[in-house]
Length: 479
Image (cartoon, rainbow, N blue to C red; front, side):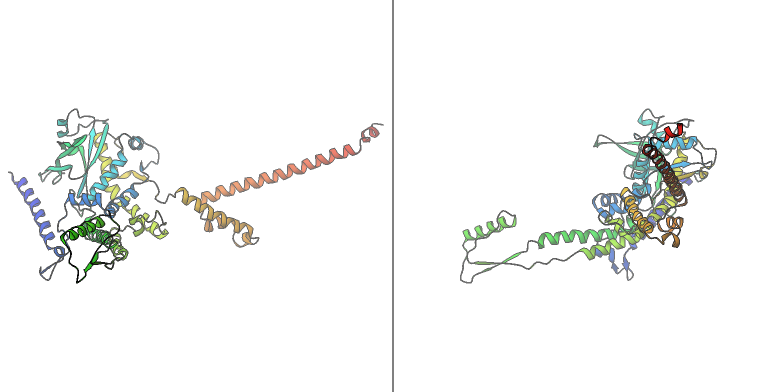
């Protein structure tokens, strides 16, 4: 083994040992005499399999991953260069996004989720220079026009890093060079593994503090709360299951002696009652009495855990629990959440996912290379404040009522001019006010025209009526 590979191996081993030592100290108090994690059942290390299982089986864990990802990627995005005009790059990107068979935007969303569940996420890119599985081992053949046939988002269990770049003079020092990618053909038991070169894999780390290969699962900071939530919810379910049907106690009379046949019959009745086959008991010499029910409302205990998870993730409680479906989240919640989503787009999605991915496609020839630097084009997102049809209808109804009250007040225009009312009370912008004003002027002009036409028609009618009333006038004039 050469010195560079040996040195890199020592660094990797040192990082693993440091993490293990840090994990071992978690939850310890009084110089290690008390281990809270051990007492409360919290794990010191969290594997990818455990995170994936938590995501698949627990509603709040899934919401922690899905809510920020789905909401921040909603609506899609376009590329716009500094010229402000549609270019070959923007056209090519729009064509990729609109290719439903490729499903690029959906795959990028899944990639973001995989990076949140584990320590990294990857995307296998299927270029048109591959004719057999062995070709995946080779670097992508650069071409002026390369076609992207498919793309698959993969978690770290399906894309295992096989080797790293150990050359300290390389630009990719410490980054993966080869992956062992697990693919499936129809059924899970037919899984096969192929070796894939890093130029065919797009790799992003999760919540990373500097490590470009591995980050931290987004579930890790709230893992203890998720476990406590399961205890409370699961325990309450068991409590209601057992408490809703209370236990019973039997008191045998002092002078009664139960025979063996009576004992077996009584036991059979109890078994049938327990399994809902019998709704009454026939006893002799035994007095049956119901035990008191012990039920508690778990809501306050659940709320504590939800609030802790909301505080760490920054997801408003109503959005985290999905209660905005039945009860609209407050405008403050929506405003704060949209601010966080916008910040996530700017400081995570664009620099960590989109721009490196677009640059990679440029290098491979899938997208045309722009004449400007990669940082000089803008990624234009759909507005997060876009209102639903229901919201638009409710806003329109409120504005209509306000306008009716304003128009019905004879002193309204003298107190607040119409343009000021449109802007400050109805919330219209300058362009909307301009359209309203022009339509209003056109309507007034049409009304005046109709009035003038009506007056002319009345004059014609009066003149015709006068002629009818004096039919001899023309004859007298002629004489």
